[in-house]
Length: 274
Ligand SMILES: [Zn+2]
Image (cartoon, rainbow, N blue to C red; front, side):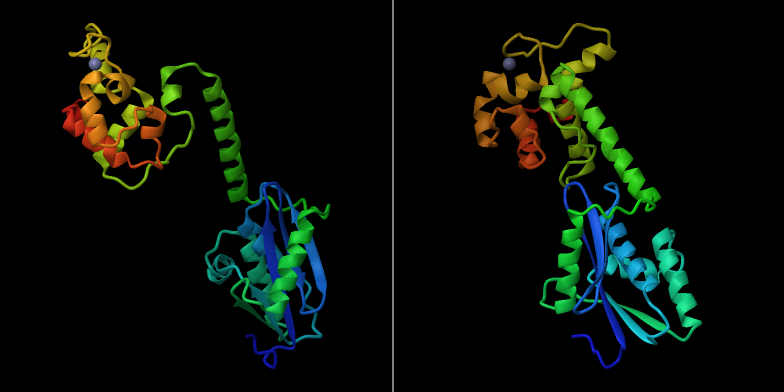
């Protein structure tokens, strides 16, 4: 609980995010003081910091001890970091410094969210309302937010191109995701990645050696990742033993147990040829 005797003014800030927007708010226990809708590329961290900056900017010299309550620990860390590169955090530091020179002390306090602190819940509510408003702030252009947006746009474009491509690799890894493997040792990760793009030493080694395509020694057909993972009848028993479904997309999916595939490859003695 915040000791209200210690402060003559207490402000609450919060940020909110949905699929399309980020917003923030500043309230007292009883009133909403400000709410803003931020550009859609902003992160929720930016929203939280923008809320705190808005709060410090409302402080006048009628108050001498002000508390700003936020549920965002990461914002407090940014503001406490004297070397922060975040322009919003720098702006908050400068404003607090200027207020201190007028004998106004500002304390930024962390309050956990959703534990029934009334001011906090008011701020949360106001930020959510702002999501559906047209109170857009245009000048918040943070390098990091823009970088993330660019990354997202690039990934979407790449994904679209990938969806339209008609390669066998596309059927093995339908989703572009640069780093989507669970924790496993580096060697196994390399094998899984090779299986997913469909290029392995066993199936494509002949290209480097300018030889003929490698054939499955049991079926005499051209050896492919799909063949030894799901088709070759010679490995039916091994597939069952290691819970390989035969649906390559499914078996190589990051959410399934990829150790099954690794153990299967070792069992059929192909591990070192991947
Ligand atoms: Zn075969």
